[in-house]
Length: 402
Image: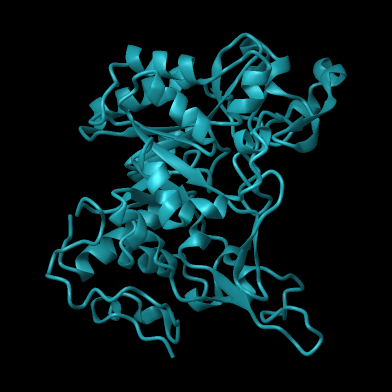
């Protein structure tokens, strides 16, 4: 049985027999944190309060701020008329009600986005005015659907204005965490993202490493380009994976989550996992300040294989997912990144039971506590309130309450 570190036993006692392998913090000085800068881990609201409201809308970002998020995270794509908007996918069929708009029916088409063939309606075929007629929708059927279609797509300018206004109203600095989404895709269309994003941040007065801005991308070329333009803003290299082989716990790779798409275009056949090696981390340090890995690079999960060679449905719900798996021993990625001088912001933490390893006994706070104890510097979450509640418990447990 895996034993919890002494400093967390009282915090996670509700987990009963949960067997979380945590980095020992009992020997650390009271109040000491294992983050790179010694500060409490950062909580970034992933696409806003997307566990409660349709993602990347002003309403979702406002709720995340009200819940206490340190940063609000957004994906930036381009409209036909070169306006940056907050959407996770260029394919508007995924997260808007565009399919219910007969006036746009003729624009439905099939194309490839980062090597993946998709059919739908794409942002580069629409002006901002047209996109503003669409309603955002929840992308998870288990989440509230009653708000679908009620909120509009947010522009980057609107998110910047919101963060500034709410910082003034609340008296606390609310940062923004924008991603250049599918940058090679948009560059090929003559709609590159980076220069427009940097120009808007400069106009906002955010230009240096002390600014409440973290820039992120899955494509190293996007971050390197912004560095070459003289940007001193903090940058984060995202590190993806497709899934986990529940028979082994190994991260698996598949299009479009196998490698940065700019690597694919260059004929580089390495996968994202090379980035988490010491050599990969050293390379990232030459152009970025931190990494944003999928959380399974830090703590993976493994199922139980039955006599038939298949992963067993342990909870009997007819589905095989994380709830049928248990956590494996943590990797050394956080420590390795810290040695390279990089902070680590992992993604994405969610509350739904199907996304929680059996160790956590259906309590999402137990997952946060495990990662916090490992020295994680920050995380992306769809449920800001849960992440902050767990952070408060963790800080109390190590005598570092804010």
